[in-house]
Amino acid sequence: MRYVLKIAYDGTSYAGWQCQKNAVSVQEVLENAIQEALGVSVRVTASGRTDAGVHAAGQVCHFDGAGLTVPPERMPDCLNRFLPPDVRIVEGWSADDTFDSNRSAKRKTYCYSLYVSKREMPLKERYAVRVDDAPSLEALQTTARLFEGEHDFKAFCASGSSVKTTVRTVYEVKVEEGESFGSRDIRIYVTGNGFLYNMVRTMTGELLELASGRRTKESLLEAFATGERGLLGKTMPAKGLVLWQVEYDISKQEK
Image 1 (cartoon, rainbow, N blue to C red):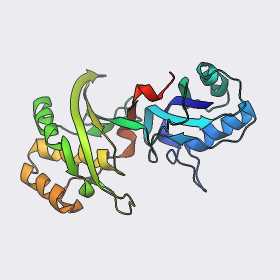
Image 2 (cartoon, rainbow, N blue to C red):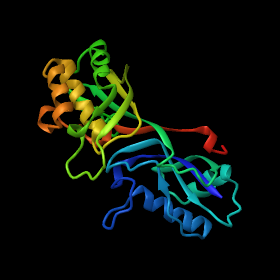
Image 3 (tube, rainbow, N blue to C red):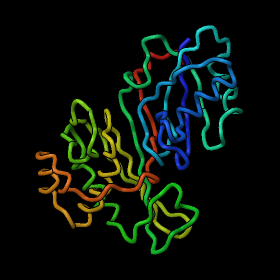
């Protein structure tokens, strides 16, 4: 049986999703939990890697459990007892053998969280990034549309990436705002067919620059055309980023 799991985790204490030799990863603690709970050694495949310090509300992964008798919907309760409190399986289901949590993914949505305050707010610092000021919601929403569509996002990718192509399609960039604990909250949701290393964090930094008038539409278009990283704003910290949702062709699942 191919088990599929939806996982939420606080990435603060982890070196990202993927197993590493000298650091603890989310994949490692999940595979250890499966070994301890079910007595089998498996390799878990995720929809994609999240970097060190990045969180997830809807990471999706799968593994093959030949001979296992645990119903897929019971897998969360079975495994959560063996996981640390900052990693939780929130849903489990089965899929056919053609389903691959990485290759079958059609759309992914990331959310980047900011809050506007002159001083740090302890109740927000773990999952959002403080900025002294920010453009109006209208300016952010208008500017966000510049990133939508198919573009070469090479300039938004950290150096050292080995991807075959840096062209990606961004279906939507949605900006919402609210207020909590006396400060303004901003959430930026980016939905696309795939993302490069640091792409959403760099997009967020550039969105703030463009909406503030410190950079121009022309400089953004030049960055798309040339791939020059120096034409863009800074890469925002990892802690503000959450893998929000991964979407699939439901016909491939037995959910």
